[in-house]
Image 1 (cartoon, rainbow, N blue to C red):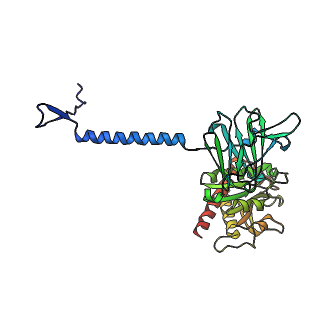
Image 2 (image 1 turned 90 degrees about the vertical axis):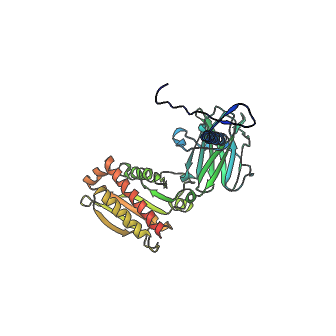
Image 3 (image 1 turned 180 degrees about the vertical axis):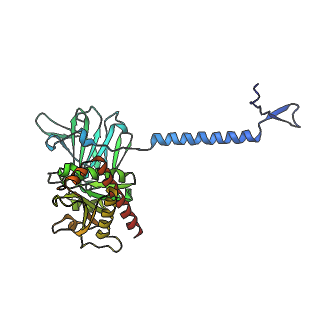
Length: 364
């Protein structure tokens, strides 16, 4: 036997009523056996719970994979049987939670659910005579959803829900039933921000790109960012003021570029002088955005000004500011705005301004 291995001898005792001697397991072994038993029970409970609890469904960019037009969809009904704020629907046999992804098109008040399945009629279909047939597989709070429709193609099944208002949605799957629950953004996230990049084509899309980068940074801090989409031409497109109100956003930050001639360069912010909160309002937000972005890119801070008449800032009932990130008429500044590293620094400046604003509002 190797010297490093040590045997633990069994302890023997003499029972006065027995003629032989019976070995006894020591107390330490009983203790080990007890904890092994507890561990096994805990593992069993965990395995059972993981197999029986509803599975949370994740989100993805469904609209980039599956494009749709209203005329191609089959209209579906929603049977009102579930509690307030919930929608439920079954899925075809064999579909797992990993086969389902969602996307919140909040700028159109649409919610997409894509299901990876070969079924082409499970939720509804159109007869040869052109009549829509609804399978009646969706139920829930009809005050929560205006309508629903389905689209089939080679990529699978796309359920399209037209929502009443902007919300966040939690989807869980229990066996073959998916439940969708509407949740106020403020109940899921510690801070909510609307970033409005304005014209996506201006200065090679610098504002949109910077807003996207800032949003990615803020997501990591638990901040929910809603990005406006001014390219939508639909009558159902959500306005900036509606997006602010329905999302319950804490602040609004618009991004734009200026055209002030070739001489001037630098960063300027604008604010709504009519909106005031003691301690932190639009002026304080404008100052924070100006200072943080100017420092981040080592550029001139041209100061803060009252928003011009007709600005969207006057329609927003929350601290709001507009940042002019640079002057496109200045060749040197325009060149900076097209640089990847410069956009990263601008995004970082907005990120720092939002965190600063969150801290100040939290203190208030």
